[in-house]
Length: 174
Image (cartoon, rainbow, N blue to C red; front, top):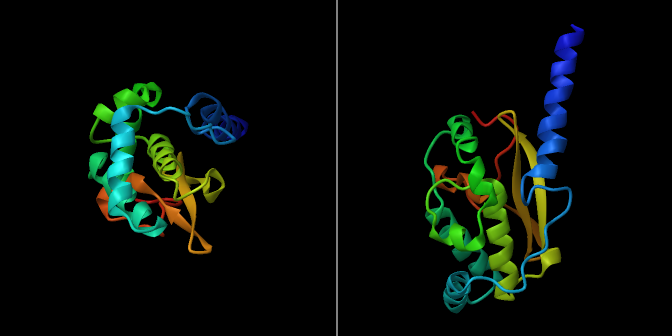
């Protein structure tokens, strides 16, 4: 029984403490956004900004853009099998992120979401909170965005499976 307890405690320490110290953008506080961003990202932000009439439209356009670019259709349970083989991708630059398509870790998606929203001028850094939940035995991050005088959940990670603005993955999403 004691060995089982040690295993459980070790698992929670690794998942909820160590991972937050090692994985970029998953820390105990938000990383600061870069002052200068790659030209490609700035062009995408400007393009969406021209199409949006207000903050709500910009959020929706950004959600769809990032969701389509980094969509990966699968059941949430099986997505965990993409997490470890793509662990290296957590450490790639913004330039490299721009070139990628398909599966993207939730922490990178939220970093890009923050980057788009803040650099657009429609949102301030304090309008975006990062939240963490336990999903299928892993820690998962989603964003809460202050929009129209209320906090709205934004979780791009499961966009390809139909998750909408106002929803997020949670608990055991099998």
